[in-house]
Length: 163
Image 1 (tube, rainbow, N blue to C red):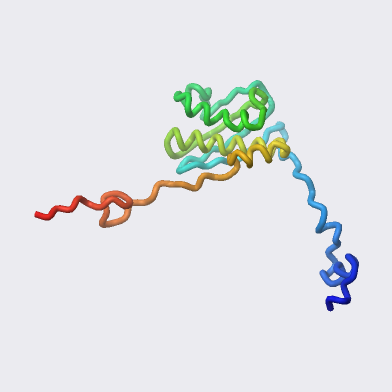
Image 2: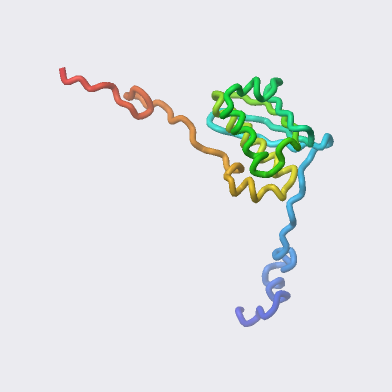
């Protein structure tokens, strides 16, 4: 059988009709935008889930109907939200509208950052390399460990008393 396959056409015949050209060429990613020119993605971090829409604009960020600096009052959380734009070099070019539910403020900021990163790479696939290298497209899977029975917390035991 090995001596029968001497060219791509022979391989195609053995493979069952799949052309070598279809296997070799990988289609470039296409931008995903809705009728309003927006890209949508969900981001997750801890227990927080964020739905994020981005569209070209002046850089306005609205989270749950409030401006970013009002919803995320701490400068560290605002910096976390701006990281995807800084890495991709698109600061002030996109308006962001996000709805967040669950978790605390830190987890929500991480969820919005994850959603913005995913939406940016859907809007412009050429940004994917920079965002992926920075680790912004990976969902941070660390969550709080559940409490076990017979324990005070997840792993902490009750205080031992000899008497």
